[in-house]
Length: 417
Image (cartoon, rainbow, N blue to C red; front, side, top):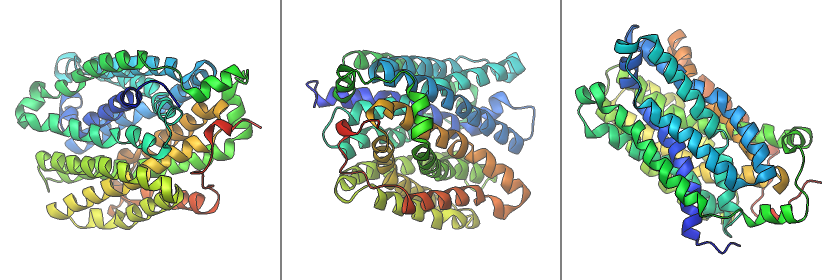
């Protein structure tokens, strides 16, 4: 489908989403330290909640980024938008690493932290959809093509956790927390260089040659494909929800209760990442054979069954097991999610539609999970998993009843009617 080496396309697709997830994990995984750096003026539990709130704020600008970059990605091409997204998100993430702590700059440091997180979210709003399309619209086997992009979740978790494991807690609190953010600058340079070498996807170029570029693709998505957006939003939201529940909420919860040390939580996150990234490739191979729906259903059901046991059994070893199983279940369905979201929208609106669905789901359902779970649990212990429970049930309803099986669809022939 494309004359450029497959390796170049894969790297170009992966690097931006790697920064996206790397940023999310170093912020979420490092919440224990960040609450001390930026929110030392409140109690530890409230500081953790405020850190999660700052984390969740990023997701309010992601839909804006999805709208803008999706719109122009369907009009001007995937490649150009991916240069902009990696520059905005990567540089903003790196700048967090040079912020002064609250002890020096007071609320100015908190304000700048919020600003940079919002900019990160804006840039990343268009990253995932464009990166996924750069891969699947250029390569033959869509399941495996999607797997490379989706595997960046687990890889980023491993990298982010290992960085925090390098130094002892005292040094991490003093200066070490900056290192993970500063590394974003290096990733940006690599990403821009590689993406400049990649051409536009053949499928988009074909639409452009045919003169079928829409004037307002975003408008067409909401007029003609709002049902697909709704389905995609809850599918992405459910996987994002139990992902954040297992990867960020559970470690933070157990660390705050002093059931496990921070280092134990980081090790659990590494295990989560290894299983997640491994299963993404396995499911990428399998989904091209049996389809997208079976993996999405199995993934959600496994996560559903673990919600209450994961918080009821307050034992370090069971904590480790449940975090690992959440990684397994997320990886099982994540590749199928990427394929489904790209295959339910025609080429002319694919960037907009897939970006809207994914970012809406992660912004309003997945991303706020640590915050909402913490707030619900503060009311009653048994409310901790309720938010995740409800979203999974809704997603399963959509997947089993209205989501079409799309593994046999020819993307090049899927056009706006």
